[in-house]
Structures are given as C-alpha cells and as structure tokens.
Length: 117
Image (cartoon, rainbow, N blue to C red; front, side):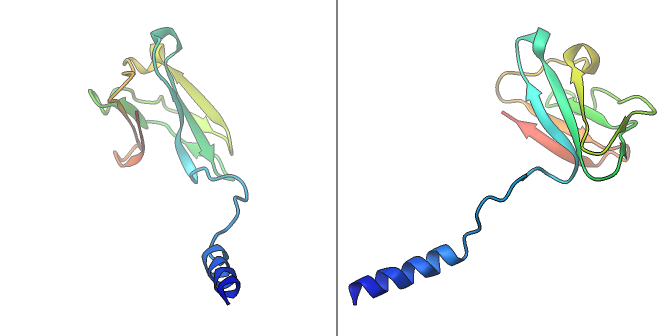
C-alpha cells in the first residue's frame, strides 16, 4: 500500500511539470545582455526575438543614474531575431559593476525591459 501511495504522489507531482522544450527568451525587443566593467568592454546588446523587423528609432537605453541617457538614431532597424550591440562609447554612460539598473524605453517612453545586477 505504501508503494502505491508513493507512486500516486509521484504522478500527481510530476504530471504538472513540463520539460524544458527550447528557447525561453522574451518576445519582441529586449535587453539580451549587458557587459559591465572594464569600461573598454562595457556594452548593451538588444535582441529582436520576433518574426518581423522592429524599428527601434528613438528608443532609449539608460541606467539608474540617467534612465534616458541615449537616444537610438532614426532609421535603426532590428531585423527578425537580430542583435545589436551598443558599446559604452556610443551610449555615453558607464555600467556599474553592482547595484545597476539598465532601462530600455521605447519611443513613447514606455519601459520595455530592465536589467539589474
């Protein structure tokens, strides 16, 4: 009887579990990665995880000190599943190696994504 109870409990517990089946990335454009210090390597990488291109003109990556630090230039397009790197020399702010928050705002100033360490 004890074995039957253990078997039934195991079935109940594991029935709702789904195996990992692939990509768990966010849909649409999001902060794919952030590389913190040293300054020469700092960068933010955005990814478009969608089937169609995304116009990210006038989107604004920023940090905890200046959430609107950089304005992505007009005509910046991310094709489907493409990534674009923005080095520190472009974005104009340093990425703190701790207690940092990176914001990604769209052209209507909506927060699309955040990253923190």
